Length: 124
Image (tube, rainbow, N blue to C red):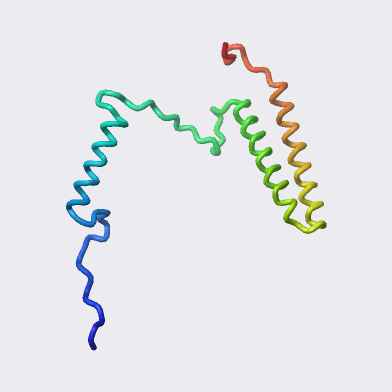
C-alpha cells in the first residue's frame, strides 16, 4: 500500500516553540516585558486572596449587601431585555419575575440605607 503523504517530522508535542529561533524571540519578549513592566528593585503590590463568591466570615455586611444589590439589578435588566422577545403569555410571567427581583433590590437598598457603619470605618 502506498501512502499519499510522507510522515510528519518528529517534534516535541509539548513544546510551544516551532524552532530554536522562536524560542529566542519568546525569551527576548519576556525580558523586554519584564524590563518595562517590572523594573528591577520594585516589588509588585500584594494581592488580596479574598474571593467574592466564596462568602466567608471576613466580608463586611455592606460589601455583601452592595454585591447583592448589583446582582439583583443585573438580573432585573436581563429579565426586562428578554421580556420583549417572548410571546404575551410568557411576557406576563417575566414581568412578574422582574417585579419580584425589583422588590428584593429595594429591600437590599433599604438595609444598606439603614446600616450604621462603625466610626472606625468611616473615611474622611
